[in-house]
Image (cartoon, rainbow, N blue to C red):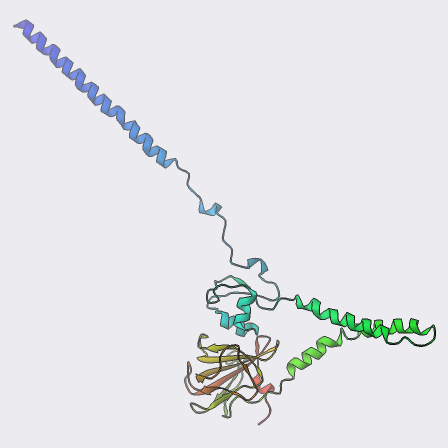
Length: 291
């Protein structure tokens, strides 16, 4: 009987050893899972501060003459009005695939490329060369005098030319774009042009010959708007129209009916008329004839 009990105790000890071995095996498996999770944690983490910052298009030209940095709320039409250029020209100069998509901080060229200035200088040199061949007959001393005179003649046209061009830019002989009374005068802060009263449907006339660089309602605060470019210096704007009678890229004559007066984006029927000199609004009354 005693022997049977000893055998039972021995069997129980064997069972305990087996169970402890099983439990130790399950405990030893845990580090395998930990190693897997720790491996995931050890993956490299990218610090956003070390990533290169994407700069807006044209940022290297910021602050340079002839370039414009896009501000919040800007559109290409407004930039054109502020810089005295057509929005299509600006889009072409900047090779823009989508002119309706611009971003704050983007820097745009707002003056035409200046490569043409080299071509302008060449005719001046060639004309001076032809003048040297004219005074040929005479005494032996005559060629020496003739050689000295064209040098002075060649330098003379280079200085008056810009002045002559500038005076031509200002000589436009404006006319009034509407026949109604002036209901609001020019103010650099509150009103960038003249407001001319009238009735809906009254004719709106081109103040001078020019090219339509904008016709539409995409400029907030102006309603149905027409912008004419008269030369490299002057734009005129005609706002709040009821009907537009011209299209972009169309050439119009002075006095041509380009729109009908209305109240689009305005509190009353009126024509808002602006004159922009190199993009800066100036008092139209100084350019229009006395009534």
